[in-house]
Image 1: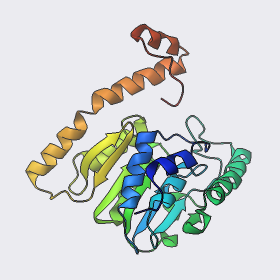
Image 2: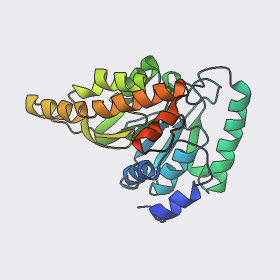
Image 3: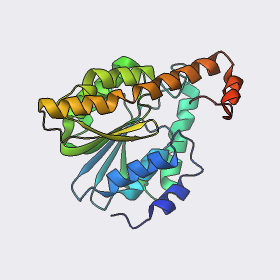
Length: 249
């Protein structure tokens, strides 16, 4: 277990930019703190280090933490697919500064590469895999399939923007919803949590699929809200007594 409490770690990342709610931070904290010396945590998509600091602060001594992010200006964030090279250099510098300020720079190995090019730079199996990389279907599918294959039996897989992003959700349906290996545990808003302990029986696979299928109405609502935001009609959400949403929703 980490020497820091969850509340201390959450407070330490309050000023770091990123799309991570407190309950999602808690899911990362729980997964990382359950690791043991010799285990390995892989993060795909670090941005400015908000989630990286949580993982590195929560993990016990002796746990290897690898952050994979090219900081290349593509897939930088919602609606920022390409053309942000100058901003990405700033993200890289801020990422390093944030890790240093949190006292975890020495614990994290940063692989500055696209996730599909980073396999050779990461050895061994994975105990905790957190995917918050490119949200388009093809790269999300690669991350779940190829990196997910390296999660050891009983390990944990966490995916951000599940049942929120079309590409990520499509990749989940393709690989996990009817899969034989990863059991759906639940979600913290749009962060899904899976354990690599599904027994592969027909009964367990059907139950696992149904538990994920019931999330699709929530997915449909998220898409509807995003359409309203894109059309600059987010104010209509007030008709339901809710504050006007902002992107990303």
